[in-house]
Amino acid sequence: AMPFASAALAVDAAGWGETIALWPGKAPGTPARLPRLKVEQRSTSPGFNDRWVTGVDRPMLMVRRPVTPNGTAMLIVPGGGYEFLAIDNEGEEQARWLTARGVTCFILTYRLPGEGWSNRALAPLQDAQRAMRVIRARASAFGIDSGRLAVLGFSAGGHLAGSLATRHAERTYMPVDAADRLSARPDMAGLIYPVVSLSAPFTHVGSRDALLGLMSTEAQRREYSVEMRVTDDTPPIFLTHASDDGLVPIANSIALYQAILDQHRE
Image (cartoon, rainbow, N blue to C red):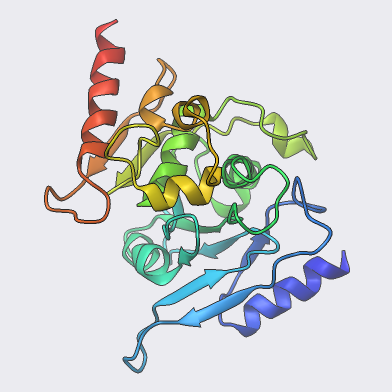
């Protein structure tokens, strides 16, 4: 238990507040040499944080509690092209807005695929599934209705949130405790300028290669394309995307919207 205690202390020292370790032991596919946690301050404005996190050695949830909980919870998934986590711009800022409205928030610091994990492409999804189950397992302690649990993801974090929404029932790791008997299905997903397709011409190449590696096959790219994975058990999805997005083309959101429409026509 000592490594987790020291990791929690390190995070608290960085001002990250209340945290929950996702895994009771080592995360699945832990390499012999763990990545080293690094927090880079990108902001030049005093009192304004814009931190990029890399080297996520022990994935966790950063808990942000409202003064008056309304029973709903949000798992917030920062983006960063699967190469870093934009923990403030796509995490803390949204948690501040949501907690002011009574929503209990859990910001996910998930493992980055290129940092040595044995099954690189599955590592983020393993963390997202586990996060949803851990929140459900502790719902009563947080005053949360376990049927009012949403996920909110941005950019590559939108890809991960979309993957959770469409692949929640897929067995990606061996169960480690009683929480893994619970559903990983979010009751709703909000995807904000999400990376969606890893196989279409409009894919965000950086996210695709960071997740799958440089030698991915077309079959792998389709397997990890969110629009290909929509089923009748996919929860309601809210999409927002600017038509002039120069980084992640809006065609990503349109492809997922079309896949959802097609699913409901069947």
